[in-house]
Length: 461
Ligand code: GBH
Image (tube, rainbow, N blue to C red; front, top):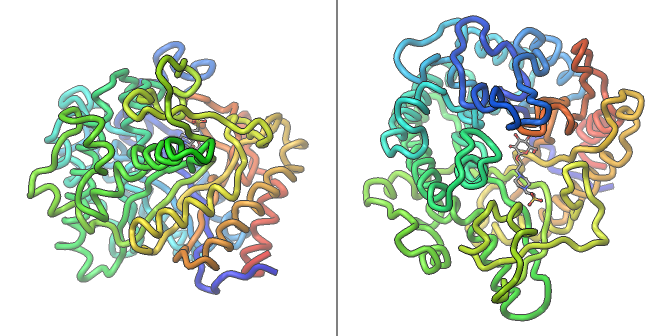
């Protein structure tokens, strides 16, 4: 049996736009995802999250499901435009009340709330008035919103995540345009990322100065990173894999742990990469009490050769493969999920070790890991998700091996509690431990939910 420390945090994660629905209820203002998903062709069959899992109305039932599963923690995000319908100004008390109820219900059931302040659903008003993440002044708006959340929820919430996957907001939202706000650019990702880091720094600063001394919580950021394995043993490919990781996660983690962007990025991007002011970096450096990691897959990386067709690699690199000079590919023997992401548990172990070595063994929490499988619209197929059980067993085993190798992994959150709105993929991609019938809203546990509950109960598998 592989056992974990008794205080290891076992949880499941979700995000506001993906589960809540009720997008115009009780005064919620629109976010960029409401706008993006209303443009024909941007999402699968033009699906939006107007109803989603109807979690806004079914939150009590959902907490009961978590309780039944024995979850120790639940990671969810707050919808900024539910709290501030126009992004700033007047507070929408009904929005505050929704999260107060949810938080109280979780605590009543011994489930620790882990709250993400921003999981991509940026207020539409601020996008239109200020150009969103491209405007340096946006950092103060993030701080203003975060401050309200600390003030209203921080007496009970002691685990905060400022941003979910800023890489995605930057690359997919401002580079490839596959996610809201749907901008396509080679330079904007670097600007958006820079302002997100500045926003993170300011949010943490407010928490540390005004709230942490009395509320005694912890705060960090959730970065996403897939592993990059050198395609061959050549020095060039090893360097390419290293560089790919630097352009992926060190882009965000180096400023936080080491005080500046990685040298490889500066070298390759020159002035296209913004520079931090002394003031900015003073807030950003050491601004995470733990390392939040969202991890899904692995790809092979090789040095791009002159004249290579890079089309195939654009997805994984978010359209900046020329900047990195890295060509990505997959080993054909790797099993694929419904997202066509390869299942490679050892990549997770290698990544955990790589991060630990680079950032001097911080406490790490895997804040997301999971998979979508095909044909699960049909509940009878979904409840027999043995492949998802295998996926989780493989990745959690890799986590266990990483801990034995010295990694300070302190918790693991499965993505996701229940099938939900998978962004531009609409409802076609199902990542849930619980099946959701999107016509009736009915939730049904899959085999993976039962397996995960048993693991939690036994403290291992
Ligand atoms: C997360 O992002 C999100 O936080 C969550 O909201 C979402 O529902 C969940 O994952 C599932 O998608 O294109 O083959 O190169 C996932 C971040 C970044 C993981 C890109 C996979 C690319 C694989 N993803 N990465 S590939």
